[in-house]
Amino acid sequence: MNVITTDIEGVLIIEPRVFGDARGCFFESYNKERYQEQVVASDFVQDNVSVSSKNVLRGLHYQQHQPQGKLVSVLQGEVYDVAVDIRKGSPTFKQWVGVNLSADNHRQFYIPEGFAHGFCVLSDTALFSYKCTSGYKPDDEHTLIYSDPEIGIDWPCHEPVVSEKDAKGLLLSELGDYLPTYISS
Image (cartoon, rainbow, N blue to C red; front, side, top):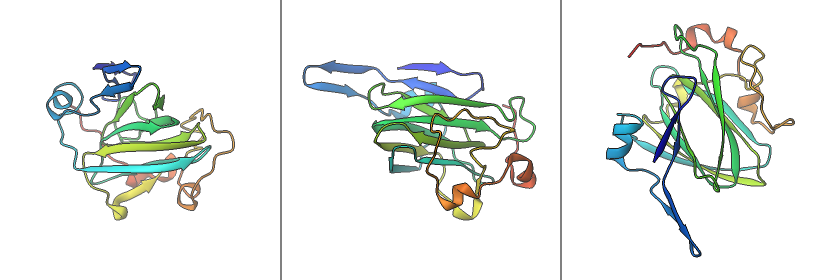
């Protein structure tokens, strides 16, 4: 596999080795030993799948006290996926990375703990998969509004379809005490 670093330390794009022929293709989507050596030393404890329609935008979500690192990929369709560094004290605070993930490019995206995460669907539908380093804790979840001008994400969905919860997300400036803290490695 090819692990691509980004401008934010710890945010990684993973290109698995794909074997293809006239019948289709095969690739290893996760191998604990290899991923712990090359991507993240943490164990993944929960897998999730979502199905969404074109222009659906989900996020930007994070957990403050029990943060989740996420390894995300698309099994069908295409999304634009975003990680935002919201860790207080981080040298890359407020910076974000966006990447296209699709069933065709087989790319994966690793979002470290302490980041807000979201995606928008570019295809008619998308089957989105993600592995998490800790379980979902609804009482610990917070939502950064996807359109925060202080962050300035250039979403390719110009008329996004969002949930009520995501539409009520807060600006970064309003999240103060609810932001995770940067811990230097």
